[in-house]
Image 1 (tube, rainbow, N blue to C red):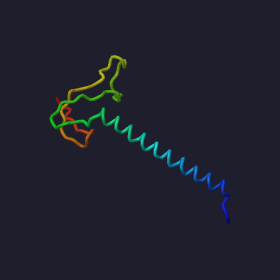
Image 2 (tube, one colour):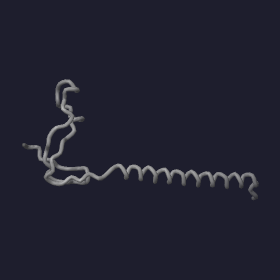
Image 3 (spheres, rainbow, N blue to C red):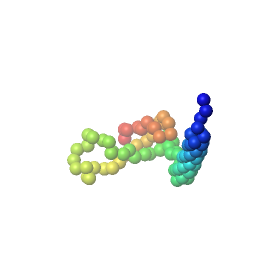
Image 4 (cartoon, rainbow, N blue to C red):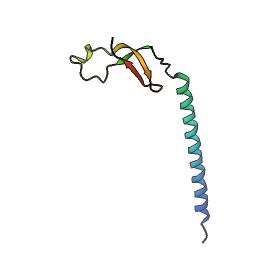
Length: 92
């Protein structure tokens, strides 16, 4: 069974377009990663550091929202459980 020459050239054109789109996406991902990495540094929490805790998701604080404190603390870091996860000592 023979393939029509127009269909064959159309497939080649689609393959080239797909390859070009993939290359453009990879370049875009690389550029976005470089920009992100340039302006962000990993957190450097250490045991014993004092940190503030956001009260954004605290639902038990009553009163007008605009009068609530944005952060609670400072609290001492008791243990590290990952780069952004810490255990705090909430007493005192």
